[in-house]
Image (tube, rainbow, N blue to C red; front, top):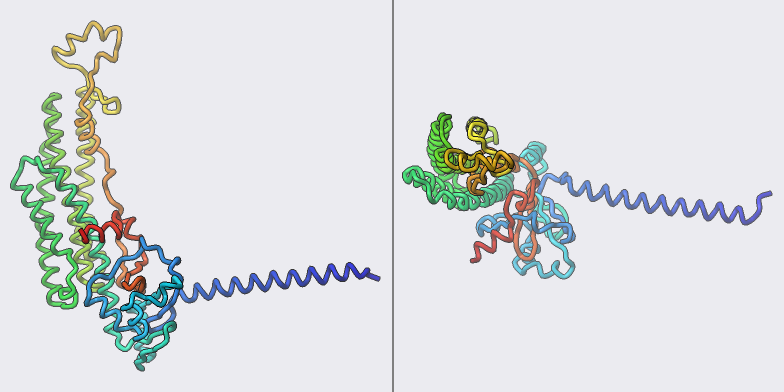
Length: 411
């Protein structure tokens, strides 16, 4: 017969196993529930009340256009609009924020075909599902929010291009330089978010036509830079002083080529944003691969030219030295018999930097070629403002911080 203490031990062990299983089941249920909520399986605009700590401010892009914010608020219950107008005073104390998920256009279209959006309902509940009263209204608001986000990314890159333009101030070809500056100014103007343009198909079409003309001008300037660099590198008989002068002049054209290629990419991004999802990335980027390939060929040509010239002139780029020539070589001939390093003399650091700039490809930025127009649009209401939470890399990984951008605008 089993002793009583064994029975007690078995009973306690069984109870412990049941408790552990219950805890694991509850945790799994909560996790699955959270995942199901994140997938957004509703046909309308889903509203979630979440902890503010779940949102990283660096990932948010503020919706700044007043007309657009009002359009988004129009799809919310009155009680939530009131809270947003008051700076979300009710939720601020509990560190909670609202997240609104506007479903992708494909989901909305499926909802309409199934008849689930036939009944308009403005729910008064703070958390739940707000059924969209208008399919076109949701699609329009979602595309406008995404369009503003892409324009924000373009503006971040255009500010970087502005900084690079300041480095070609001593460019000898003033006519070419003025054309590059004018092109940049016109592209920057087109990148400004203007609600009246985004809402009007005819005005957007006119802006896209302007971008097509700017793209053609950018391509012409790119062709000119390639021809000028090819002309310099065709000369294989330069002595050291002429080689240094040619390297300095090439660098101006080379820098312009990089700037123009970046500008061409921003023009493609602008066109994509203005189409609001009606055109694919591939259509908007059609010319980019051609001129990216041209730039790569130019760099390979530069690399070969520098390599061949370095062998001929005795340039040791890694050591920042070059072989002595002429009277300088004769003067050091005898000491160089005992110390071979005296056969070489130091090169200016600025010259070495120019050669390295032209033979390395370390200033290319990672290109983000996503398409958020056909994805769910998540909007966060926080501190009385509305923000877009994109399903892509946060803005600071694109080369700019949201907070820094806002600070610059305030100044």
